[in-house]
Length: 333
Length: 264
View 1 (cartoon, one colour):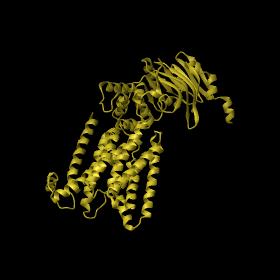
View 2: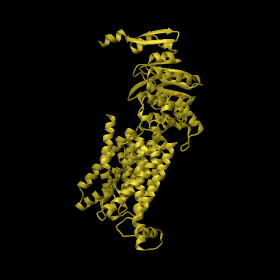
View 3: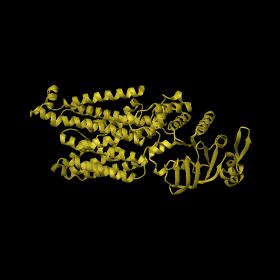
View 4: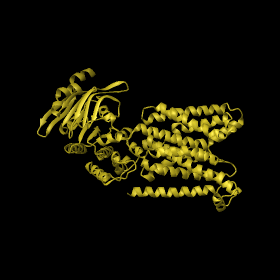
């Protein structure tokens, strides 16, 4: 039972850290607001400038950081469990690339300039296309490998189309805007973004969270899992659609933020006795921790330079990925 | 009623007919050895009986149509030990064996006393109590094999299908496993295990089913299946077969003459 006790402790600690970082995130920003003053303004029902800054700028940013981090951590843990591969990450099934493509099309065609909400909506449509194609290509075949292959094909195609849009962009400013958007950021998001993304994310979370048992069984391979009463087709459906809905929504409002979904499950796995079902909640909290911390960091390290969140996570994540690959190679040798 | 009743079973993999016209009936408490050369269809037959490969024909599990059973219900009737012993994550041996209780539990239910007792019994039966806190991925091949069998035992299904369960076990653990299967059978569980060791199959199984090219070519007590003639024809080997006080002894000695000549 010590393993269970340790798991509960981990969850409690992570939840507290997330709460702390959430509050901290509210107190950081270019507008000079004293922390306590800001926090009290958040709940005050007045039209003061501070209240406005807190409610319209900082609160959505903190909420999105929490939700997107949780999404990336949870979907990374679910996909690693489903594909039985510690190198799997949410981008693997093509959702991030397709959502990005949708957003890029919105910028490229000028739709997003006419109507700001066109960007996230197009991104969501892109994610939807990805999930349809992946499901169609993986088809009735319940083997996880077909999902990986389909995802790689979709990612590659979406990436190529994004490059094409950059290549043919009408002017350098459009290209810049596309580039900057793709770097991933939580700057200047509003509550509308929160309300747009939240339903998809919550829907996706519920689907992914219901996978716990099946993922535990999948530790022994998909045939043994099937013999233990796991319906592999249902699992594929939940894993793919759950990831697409939550990660698609995350990408739609914040751009592609890499490596969180890869690193967080990996870091937390030893702390939950490697059980895939326990890794789900732990990774969701861990992802929220990492993203909130990173988003605070980009504001503190380079205030006024708009350091992109996706750049920071990649700069930290890429070396980590290298270490992972090296360690995996050493184990195989 | 039969634990497993198969008739007219046929299955194809990648366009090749792997099983043809299979009829097999396994009653409660039978320990059946599934033998045959590589590629004869042993694994496919076991997997077809779990609905893991598409097949045509009838498969009844405890009288119910396999294809109409809900997955979790099926898992309470049949357990399976796969040939593949790959364990993806370093979970503990105890957690791994406990996975066998999943079909008996609701989605978010905690383990009951019955679950714990089943896990303890399985650990004890497979002689792995000392390994319970170890990481399953750190174990030796033979230890992994025993842990995975314990997982299937914890499932407490009336029918156990095992694909080459003795492969990679040392002689002592091979004999111990045969004893476990025999004990299970004595208490009413039906066991169907594919195996390559004809000596073990001869001495421990109640009944042998010999597959060749996807068909059953012999089915009966070991003495009627493991004849020098059939072994020569199906396996292309000469074997020393004799009845002793301790049971049937089968020892392959050399390749059969005709096959040898063809190879030269």
